[in-house]
Image (cartoon, rainbow, N blue to C red):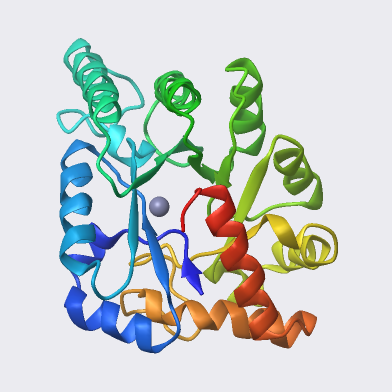
Length: 275
Ligand SMILES: [Zn+2]
């Protein structure tokens, strides 16, 4: 199994990464994509990919996560100061510079996206997303998208940016219509801990549709250390629990774990041009 979305730098502050990655390997995880959140995380993840690459291959991505676009001086209002805007512009310049001199582990741009639940103005989130999409097209790497109450805004942004590339909508939850709209634009969908919860009825129904019609567009993910699997709330999520997602797919839809593993592994390697 490949964990297509694991925040290794954030995980490192919660668990012993060496133990965690050995456990993941023992549980059948063969590779990890570590998306980044802000400029310091780019180098941190690249170092982790070198440090732990002997346990299993670690791919990385370059991006500015919407959560980390907040203004540390002004966190209670959805507005921006000039200094904040300036800081974001500088981060975007650094992003371009990092992309001009790619570390070997970098296989994607992200994580970027739009979150409908945070105190970051949509105008700013859209501007940053747009810059990521332009960059991804320019350097021909797939993009890793974050969503929350924002499918319509993301789809609109892809259209407005005339995005030509491919990518993944990570931690996908939503309707069959939303899933189809992304697939039509060349996107893959990341399936993670959400489906281990019985209340995720709509996303489970969508997954059933995807398994029957678009198995070649599904990736597995944990989003560790966040998004705990059902029954594991209260402890950090870790890549070793990825098999919970595969097991639930087996229980609900009778797809064999072997089939899920081999198809999603192929999907990952195709999307990220990895080997
Ligand atoms: Zn993430």
